Length: 369
Image (cartoon, rainbow, N blue to C red; front, top):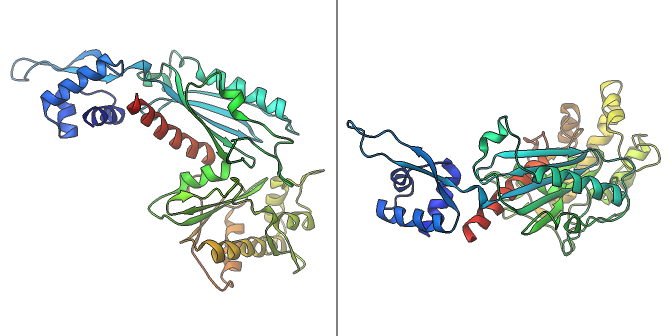
C-alpha cells in the first residue's frame, strides 16, 4: 500500500523529493525512503538527477524522483467516419503522441483495419523531439500496456468485434480491433461503442442518466449506478429502431423519420447532418417540430424503462440550440419529465471518454507491476 501511494502521488505531481512524498502521502520519511528504494529496484521510479537547493539555512539537498520512462504508456483510439485518431498517453495523463488517418466512404473492414494499424503504429513510436507534448517525456517511453478503442459501430460485448447491424451507417462488415492492435499492445485491449465512451466522459456526481447521440448515426447510452449498461450482447442503447412519432403523426422507427423528412445521405440510412442543419437555418419550423417530437418520443421510452435523473443530448445536430429547444418543448408534454441538457463535452467526446479510461487502466497496470 505504501508503494501504491508513492506511485500514485508521483503520477499526480510528476517529480517529488522524499520529503515532499512524505508530506503528500502522510507516510513517514523513512518508510517513503524504503518505498522509493524498492520501486527503484523494480524499475518503476528513478532519480531524475535534479536536486533542491541546500545549505545556508535551506536544509539538506533533496533528490527529485519521478516515474521511470519504462513504466509504459497507453493508447486511446477513436474509429469513426471522420477517420481514425490514435493518442498515446503517459501516466501523468499527457498526450505524448497523436496520429490521424482518413477513412474512405463507404468504409470496408480491410480499409478501416489498415487505417487503424497505421495510426496506432505511428502514435506508438517515440514522442516528438520538441513541442508541448514531448515536454511530458518522463513516463512516455516503454511498452504500450493497454489500449482503449472507441468504435462508431455496435460492439459485441463478448468478442470486442465491431459488428454491422441494419441501419448502422459506418462500417460495411465486421472488424476485430484486437487482431489489429495485438502486435503493438502488451496488455489488454478494450473496445466499446463510441456513444458509451461519450457518456462516460459526461459522468459527474449523478449516477443515473441517459445520453443520446444525434449525428450522422443515432445512439444512446444508459448510465445506472454509475456504470454504462451494455446489455447481454453489448448492444444496449441502439435507439435507431425505437418506435416514435413520425412527421405524419403516425408511429414509425426513429431512423425512418429522416427518410420521411428527406434528410438521409444518398443510398444510405446515414443522416445528412449538413442538409439537416441547413434546413433548420432556413425554413425549418416544421422540421424542428418533427425532430423534437421524434426524439421526445425516444426520451419518453427511456424514462419509462430506466428512470434517469436527467438526459444528456450530444452530437453535431443534437446540441444545436433550436433543435434542443424543440426536443425540450416536445418532452414537456410527456407524462414523466426529467431535465434535458446539452452535452458539456463537444470536442471529440468519445475519444475523451476512452482517454480517461485508458489513463485509469494504465495507472492500475503500473501499480500491479
